[in-house]
Image 1 (cartoon, rainbow, N blue to C red):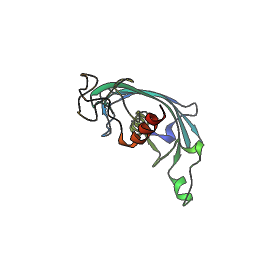
Image 2: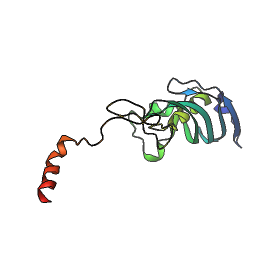
Image 3: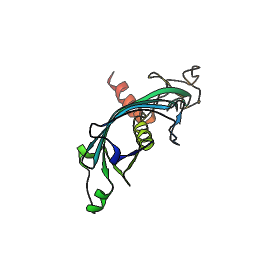
Image 4: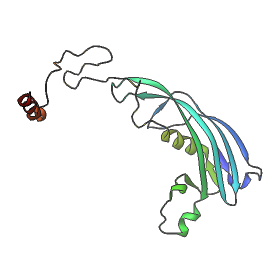
Amino acid sequence: MKIIVSEIPEEGLELNLKDDVKTDAVSLTSPVTAVLRLDKVGENVIAKGALSGDADLQCARCLTHFPMRLSSQVNVVYHPAKDIAKSEQHELKGDELDTVFYRDDVIDTDDLLREQLLLSLPMKPLCSPDCRGFCPKCGSELNVEGCRCEKDEVDPRFDVLKRLKQGKE
């Protein structure tokens, strides 16, 4: 949805969105729903609200696909793109990290939803917190079947410590 900044009323704008957001980074299995409030302060627009959507993720340990509900709080400040041209270099401070720029008096909510949804993705998605993954030796999936590898092998780097311990006892 495209929002014309100059048409945002003084009292603000409430949006209830349900969009099919397209992204190559993750497979979304449901439309993204969002409740947003847009308030205009001078040329800037403050967007606040919440969004959520369902995604099909791949576990980082066992590589199985699993569904996950993604949700995020939105707190973004839009500035006109002409503000970028005023200064050649500008370092973002901590309170400016949620800054976005708009061009030609238009804000695209699809871009906002996509960006905020991607930011809500876990760094290491897990199908469950106790996922055991694969055995590094034989490759069997430890969630499904047990491993037949010998467990008493000692890392050769610790062999010196083992001999030291045996010498003291």
